[in-house]
Image (cartoon, rainbow, N blue to C red; front, side):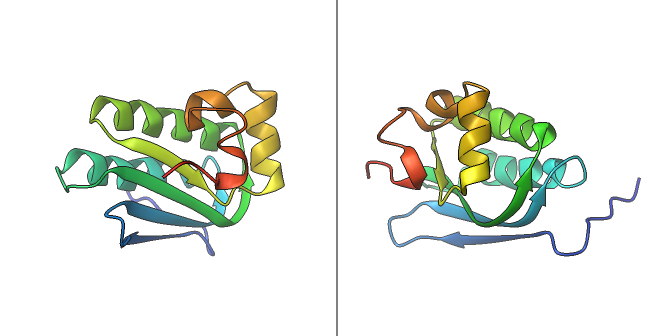
Length: 122
């Protein structure tokens, strides 16, 4: 099966100076793109690349729907299973609101207050 990503959606992966893998999400995280983010995240978490955390950078996130939220929950489960921490950096207001309304903010970030706006303890 051929999988076509919508125009404008991109994932950019870099290794940070702190040794974390950072995936920058650009565009819509939705039905059409959630599987690709999950695949990329799992590849980094399961390949044994030494890193402390997987950081998802949402600076350029346009929207996140329920399928995108499901992807984040699956990525979190994989991170925990592989001994990594998951960080959701630079969350736009619409993502913050989605996480708060669904009660998943604390689950995905570890704390309510310490994780606000992508400012986690290092």
